[in-house]
Image (cartoon, rainbow, N blue to C red; front, top):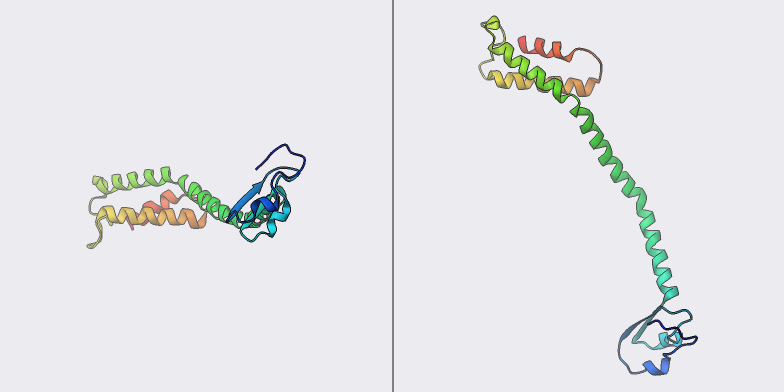
Amino acid sequence: MATNAAEPVVYKEDLIGSGEKLLIDLSIPNNIDVAAKEISQIKLVNVDDLSKINDTTLQKREAEVPKAKEIIGVHVAEFLNWHDMRKHVPVLKAVKLKLNEIHSSVLFAGTKTRPAPNNSAEEKIQLVINGMATKMRNHNRKGCHYIEAINDFIS
């Protein structure tokens, strides 16, 4: 309820015996007599009550901000790690292509590049690429991982 009245328009006496009610008084000054709160079946909420509820809710939400920032921080770190690893994808693809070329080259026929009995050439190449990716991720150093991968493949 909200009116432009200077004093209450609903009094305690008007609400006696009216049953269970929730009354929200949005007026300043109050349009519902605060004595109506004395009736057990009447729940009266005014602007001050709403303000207190809002303040309490805001405090609870503000208390959760550090937890939310921590969760966001974890996801940002995971994303940055993923993004950092994506920069290696072109190199890894190029090395894989080159290893496939080496494997099929007549120059290397009969060398150690033949796969072990339990591994196909594709499996060996993938193992070399996975090893290269791991080295690039873990060692984060400059150097020629490309040459290391070829050496790993040939040996």
